[in-house]
Length: 486
Ligand SMILES: Nc1ncnc2c1ncn2[C@@H]1O[C@H](COP(=O)(O)OP(=O)(O)OP(=O)(O)O)[C@@H](O)[C@H]1O
Ligand SMILES: [Mg+2]
Image 1 (cartoon, helix red, strand yellow):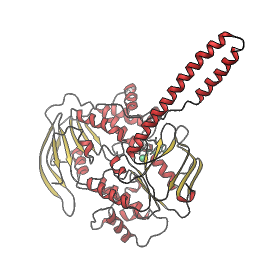
Image 2 (cartoon, rainbow, N blue to C red; image 1 turned 135 degrees about the horizontal axis):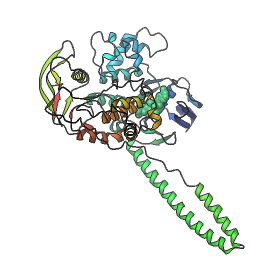
Image 3 (cartoon, protein in one colour; image 1 turned 45 degrees about the vertical axis):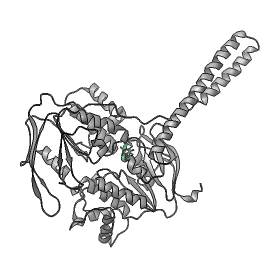
Image 4 (tube, protein in one colour; image 1 turned 30 degrees about the horizontal axis):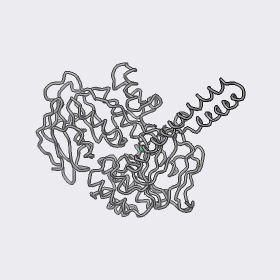
């Protein structure tokens, strides 16, 4: 492949966050013009970091990142940076440009049309944090598209999107004419438009490039592991044979010693040609979220709720009383008010909802804001346990792939998926009586999802779940549904 065809090329690029946090080790790969690629790799492998290197936000420690002449790059980040949540929409979009833009308003309108974000009056003045998760996902995508880049980088763009949103985005990307790289844990979404994969291997810190879609790559990797194991087994057999013969000849003495020596050299050569078998990414250990002891009677009642969409608020009646071991699914399209309702329930808003006294609430928030970003993982989990039981803390953390390095990291420095895994570990340690989960699949690697679904399915306290992923919800026992869209 000629170098002219690529928009971007990594040459022996290494990067680490501090000494014990290597991310890339002498990585080489090109990105060809017009390609639509997926990035895969486990939570915390460094996918978002890779994007930051591509866009120039981070600089490599060594090696070169060649961006072809005139090529512009724009990223739709995984989440809105915290310091930008208080910006108004117009300011947020202006920040995407280094030079002043005089026609920003019509450009915002045009790009919001593309991402299918319904226009409200005064939208340009609205603060970013006031939008729902699905609306924020659309704003993030729009913030990259408005720059009309040659290379578009999308970091988990389907998080929080409802079915209509995902369909719209898929169609857009199928028709998108420029080069595009997408990080996503949604296989169906990726398979609809990508033709190649960059796999960040967390064990070797290398990037492997594969043709084909997500399923092809999974198959290729398994086949490769099988091939490498077989090759090593064959070598091992020959090595043993040679060793046995060498011993036999060595005992004979005389000239035979030379033969034995030659055979031992061969053994060494064969040892060296054994390959390092590619390791599969790790999956979290199966777990349960123990429910608070001695729960009885009605844990939560909901008699009415208010939706604040569109021009006016509407109050609706409901008739819900959740007992122990009852699971409620809260449904409705993006922006209807699911997260707001959950928030009000937790805060114990005065009218309409009531949590029984003494019930401990475990709350998994869409934006992880129940976690203190300045605290370490260790301190966060210690608080969740509520007693100094370090052994249990470490054992639980390890089950969620939070190694001893990660445990000492500040929550704010974790990858988004790792924050999710900390949130789950906290729930396990907290033993809640009422479990409230707002989009618990966001950012989480696909291989962990069946295990999380099983834990929720078996949870024996009262539970309210919001999720936009039908295949996930299908694996969880649901006893009652409240559809806000009705
Ligand atoms: N500013 C930072 N300081 C120290 N460590 C960091 C920093 N940012 C990220 N890391 C660490 O680097 C690793 C890679 O993070 P990154 O966000 O790139 O992962 P990711 O592959 O995008 O994960 P996810 O799938 O969860 O989004 C993580 O272990 C994270 O804790
Ligand atoms: Mg990431």
